[in-house]
Image (cartoon, rainbow, N blue to C red; front, side, top):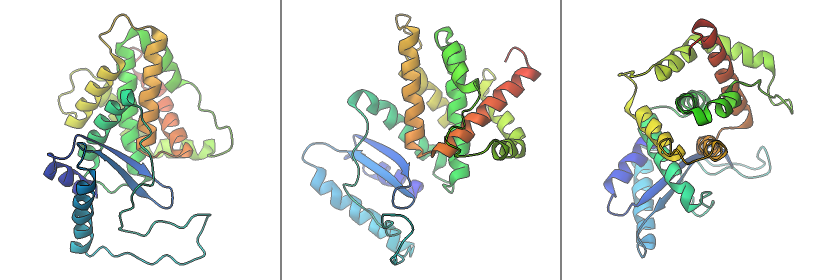
Length: 262
């Protein structure tokens, strides 16, 4: 589906000023797409969207399975392979929209060929957060605050997930996580995917790395906004975010034991 969204955006550049992608699980797993178009074109553009994706579903014989009552939970799930309109508001201010739009483009590029499931999103989020951590180490004004955030012990308040489960998951993925961490943290790594370089540039722009006049506190607020935007657009549950933080904590600390200067 992401590949088709990317194709649609590319084919309709004359309409599209900007767009936002967000994974969501309300009323069933779904993808939220918001597109900014020039004034006066909104009504016309709705029919363009509708025709394109309904044709996509029909061409690939993607059926809409009936949802029978009663259902699990309070709300009836969305019908599969359908388009729903006007069900959410864009959750970003004008100042925050640039970051969300840039990340949306990165999501489409990085994940367009992948099956989107919890494992894919956790792995992708791990990449994004390691890049944030790396940039924090490159900026003395952020190193302590951001480093502490990622390396401090994970709070399991509320019992969403247990430590034994996290430890087992980490052990079974330890080498892959270490490889990702090493590839991102090593300077001048030439074989990193292009979307990861784009994400690094996006972080630098958002944090205003070159602006010597920003206070440490203000830079940390910027980092918090980047972190929350990543987690919101990937639709990470609390349990998934706890897992990612645990993976980051364990990987960073393990790497430090092997390489004290990392």
